[in-house]
Length: 138
Image 1: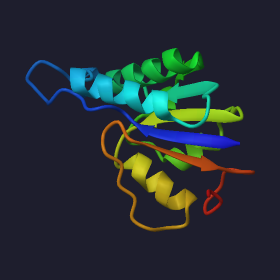
Image 2 (image 1 turned 45 degrees about the vertical axis):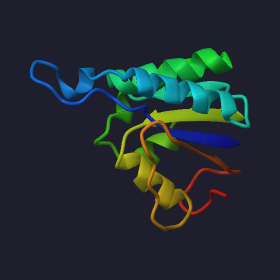
Image 3 (image 1 turned 90 degrees about the horizontal axis):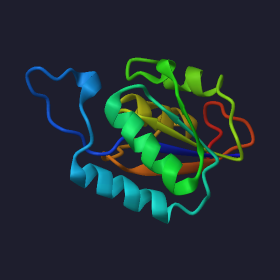
Image 4 (image 1 turned 120 degrees about the vertical axis):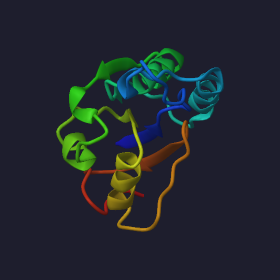
């Protein structure tokens, strides 16, 4: 099974009257996600996204380009323990997960048994697993 972990694209800055949950992708962020989606080496079958607007928009781009099913999951909010959520999700042969920093970087570190992982906005990391658990990604 393959897991593609994607940090949402670059979002609008914080501004009065717009909650963090409602911040949208910038035009540059949208273009970057479209580019990443097109160059991924695997065809994504299922995309999970956080319910925050910028993550939903990122997941929609991936879903559209790959003709993949899209599921927005409330448990994928930035404050969750991501690895616990991932192990409960239905996964396909290639599944994408759209999330936020720092939780996305923390789960990558757990899956590859340590190291310092940084993902820029709109970046993706792909891993292969037999079973998703700490230290099993390659």
